Amino acid sequence: MICVSIARGRHRFLLAELRHLGAQGVGLVELRLDCIQSNIQLKRLLTDRPCPVIATCRRRSDGGHWDHSEEARLTVLRTAIAEGVDYVDLEDDIATTIPRFGPTRRIISHHDFRRTPNDLVSLHRSLAGLDADVVKIATLANHPNDNLRMLELVQSSSIPTVGLCMGEIGTPSRILAGRFGAAFTFAPLNPEKILAPGQLGWGVLRDSYRYDAITPKTRIYGVIADPVGHSLSPVIHNAACAAAGIDAVYLPFLVPAGHLRDFLASASRWPLAGLSVTIPHKESVLSHVSHRDPLVDEIGAANTLRFEADGSVCSFNTDATAAIEAIRATLEEQETGFGGRLGLNTALILGAGGAARAIACGLRRQGVEVTLASRTIERTQELAEVVGGKAIDWPARHRQPYDCIINATPVGMHPEVNESPFDASHLRPYMVVFDTVYNPENTLLVKEARAAGCRVVTGVEMFVRQASEQFQIWHGQQPPEGVMRAALKQATSSVRVVE
Image 1: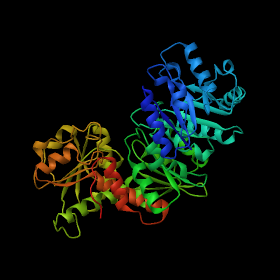
Image 2 (image 1 turned 120 degrees about the horizontal axis):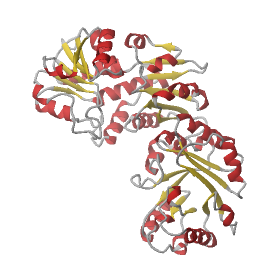
Image 3 (image 1 turned 60 degrees about the vertical axis):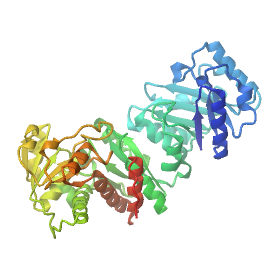
C-alpha cells in the first residue's frame, strides 16, 4: 500500500486534497501537520475523513517544517490522538512521553540523515519496545546494498514495519517496500513537494512502477549508472512490461564505480533478473560476468546483463546494432537510397566512452572510416587503437569535413540544453548528424543540424532500438516498440502519434 503524504499551508487545501485522494480509493494518507501555517484545527481535518490518516508533525531536525516550540508540537500530537486519528507518528525520543490512548495506532519512527546504521536489527528491536504498532526506520543510503539490508530487515520482522532508505541511492527501497512485506511506503501527492530525500511522486510510484502489483514473484530489472536520475529507461521498460502483461519491474540503481563489485555480488539477494549498464560501468562490468556475447568481446563493453538461474551472468551489447539501424532507418525514411551500405565514407564520433566504442565498432563493420575526438586525448587514442580508427584532439574536430557527425557525449542533455559539442558554423547540408542524447530529443545540435539542412538521427531512435533488443534478451518476446517510443516521447514532453 502507498501512503500518500500531503503537505499544505492552509486547512482548506489540505482537506481538498484529502477528499480527492479518498475519491481515488487511496487507503492511507499522511497529514503533514508541521506544514500548516496557522493554528492547527485537528477536529476540522479529521471529521468525516474519507480514509485512514496518519498525523505527523515533524521537527526540522527530523526533516520537517515545525517552527514552534517542542511543547506545542507534543500538544498537537496528543490532540490528534484525543481526536481519534487512525495513526500517530512518534519519533523514538518522544514515544515514552506520549502514552497510548484510545484506538489510535502508534508508529514509532527513527530518522538518520547521515547513514544507514550497521546494526539495524538492534535499532528495530529498540523501536518495537516503545509500544509500537508499526516501526518506521528512514535512513540515508550511502551504498546500494543499504537498500538490501533495510528490505531484508523489513522481511524478517514480526511486527509491521516500514523501512526506507533516503537519497537517490535509496530509491529502490521505496519501490520494492511492498515486495519485501513493508506495511506501506510513502509518496507525496505533489512530486514537486518532496518531503524526504529520494521520494517518488504518488502518480509515478502507482502508474509507472505499478507499486500495488509488485509481489514476491515479480522479476526485478534495472539500470545501473552514476548518475542515474536522468535515465528514462525505467519509463520505457515499465511501460513495455505493462503493455505485454509481464510481471516485472524495472528500477533505477545509483551505483558509484567503487560499489559495482559489491552490488553485483549481491544480485541474488534482490534477486536481479537483468540490468541495463551505462556510464561509468560499460567496460568495468566485464570483469564481473560469466559469459560474453561475441559482440561484447569485439566492442569491449556491455550495456546489458542477464542473470541466469544457475548464478551465471551473461553480457550483451545492444548499442552497436541499435545505432546502425537508427541511422539506416532514418536515411531510408528520407529516401537516400544507399543500398546495402549506409552510404557513408567518413564519420567523426565525439566521445570516448562505452557508447562511442559501440558505435565506432558498428560503423567500422559497415566499412566507414572512423575518427574519434574527446576531451581526453589519451582515452581517445586508446579507443581509436581498439576500434581501428583515428584519434584527434578535441579542438581539431572542426578542421576536416566528415559525412557523419555523431555525438556520443552527454553534452546537450537535460538540464544543460543550451550546449552543443559541435559548432553550427561547421555543419554542412550533405552531413548526417546523429545525436545519441535522447532527453531532450531536440537537442541544440539537432536543431542546428536541421537548420543547416543536414539529415538528422535523434537519440530517441537509438534508445528505443537498444531497449527493444534488451527486452527480447530478457523476456524472449518481441517488445511493444510503439508503446516504448510513446512513453519516451511523453516523458520528454515531445509526444507524437505512434501508429
